[in-house]
Amino acid sequence: MSGTEIVGKIRQETGGKWKPSPGSIYPLLSGLEKQGFTQEESPVESGMKRYSLTENGKKFFKEQVILGQKFMEKMTYLAPILIEGFHFGMNEETWLCAKESAKRVLQTFVELDAKKEALTKENVAEIARIFDNSNSRLRKIIEESNGKSQPRISE
Image 1 (cartoon, rainbow, N blue to C red):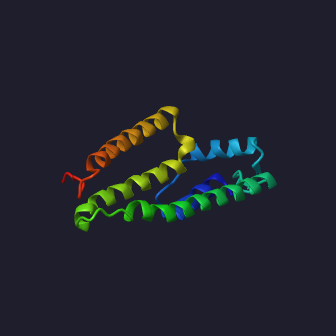
Image 2: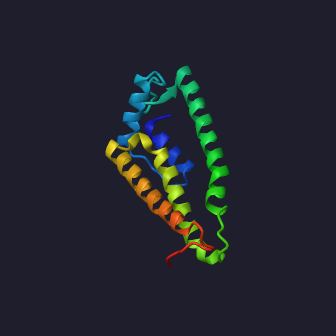
Image 3: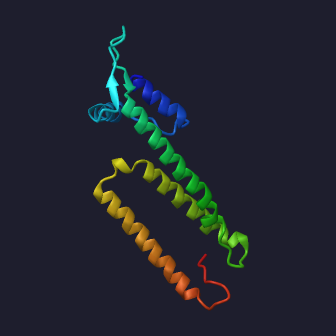
């Protein structure tokens, strides 16, 4: 495929949610070629550069697909337990806003994980700070609620 065809395929596969720019695709293809995962094919009549996977590239691709499938299987299994599985004996409507927030955070984290190669060290440090801060605040609520029949939830 050419870089343009790859962009089109990604756009199609993501339902239009992601359309990488040529400025991101071509350096990626160049890097994959340097690593021995792709090779440039002879130009076609239109002069358009086309790329194909090498045997190492096919093997690497299969490994990445398997890793992605395993990750999604874990997330598919864990996400409902983590988000839907906690009930504290309160009205479901009261708890719904927290569950919806948790779902959005999980979705954002999955998106960040998919783009982790593009994140800077500063991005990763900030993400860790956000999660550490959130975790500390949630742990405090747990500690405050220990021994009480119902935890305190601010509305």
